[in-house]
Length: 200
Ligand SMILES: [Fe+2]
Ligand SMILES: [Fe+2]
Image (cartoon, protein in one colour):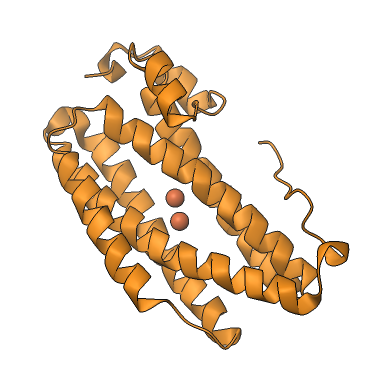
């Protein structure tokens, strides 16, 4: 697993108050973003019908559960920081999540997997920055908690990466989407040898 480090976010790049404000802003974005992700994944796993797709349906359900858990953790952090979610952003992101969840029923297999991998990569970056702002504002314990969330998002990214790697549309979509799958995981390597796992 690679390690993640935020660039230029430290005690010398701003005051503690600046970093705490930046942390709150990111957490508010993340709180709404987790809602969008959870709704999108609900549509995603529901669209993966049939016995053949049971394993991936269950994995997407597990990932959805992790996003709800993150959302609860982020809500706690915001409340300790004396803040909370931004209502309009929650409503907007809930609609976006449901919209993308419904698209999974018509978008085939590859595009929802690609979009999810890209979303997870953004979440990794978001929590990396949040952890750095937390530490730069003296919230060391928050930093540790956010590091765990980074690791979990990176696991999600790796899983979705394994699902879309090798698809014929990937080279073009990676240029438009500006994201390429993360390194192949051992599970992904094993699955790619399994004929039952071929992209459909
Ligand atoms: Fe998450
Ligand atoms: Fe995630």
